[in-house]
Length: 162
Ligand code: PNS
Image (cartoon, helix red, strand yellow):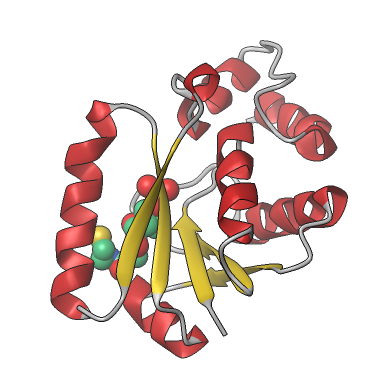
């Protein structure tokens, strides 16, 4: 069994995350979307909201080998528990590289047997991030096409209330 982990804050999931999930799902028997619980980033959406939204997207998109779970603590511990050999991350621009390089170095140090693979975001989504979705949504900007359609209203309504 080839098992992969796609970790992140997903606060909230964007269409860019979905692109990567779809691509990764073709490489693995099971791909776990691992939602970080206690991020220093102070997420706007609770971990329950984030996992529930991702689960809705998985069903709507028919990604049968994807499973969404939350995790706390070290990512490599979650990966070991799931029997995963690969971590999946997305790269948008060179600005992501430094950050990803550091995460990779820490994870390699902790568990050299688990490798990280990277998917390039499609050019039309290279500007897209959860934080600019949060900003647009908070001020009532249109986020159509930037987040998976099945969770768009939930995200917009929630961000307006923030
Ligand atoms: O979407 P993000 O916030 O860029 O994802 C970052 C994430 C969740 C992959 C990273 O913060 C993480 O793995 N955190 C868990 C704690 C851990 O394992 N730290 C060591 C690697 S930095």
